[in-house]
Amino acid sequence: MGFEEYVRLRGERLVRLARLLVRDRHLAEDLVQEVLGRAYVRWDRVSRADDIDVYVRRMLVNRHISWRRRRSSAEVATDAFGDLAAATDIGAEAAERSAAWALIADLPPKQRATIVLRYYEDLDDATIARILGCSQATVRSQSMRALATLRRQLADREEVLP
Image (tube, rainbow, N blue to C red; front, side, top):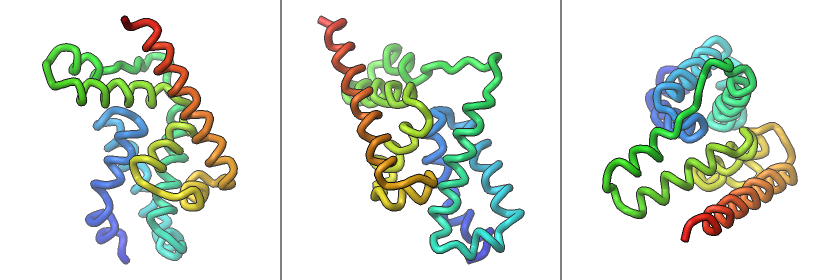
């Protein structure tokens, strides 16, 4: 498969994955553009990979983690979706979904990537481990820690709300 064909077939899905990782459509598009630029330069090596999708997703997740490490102190993350849910009557389900993504956004990058790859991309432990460059046991422990954190945060919210 050529680079142009790959981008045409998988580009939208990569942007959706990136959007879930960074919670901002424009930053997600920038992230995917940067990753695809890097993939284009070494497409001969990328196209020889056992699974091109895994290779490119791994590049995407690694680049996202690098971005988070280097984020300028001048950048301020906002919860635009939470404000939207509060300002408009979009329904309880949409508000709950927005609140859930806000909690997921607060997770450390590798835990967030694990949760997104498992529950949004519906990938198994072996594939996630290949994408993240770690063992399957690490994937399971990252998932376990992320879910424990989410449960704790939900319990704390329930205590605060009547």
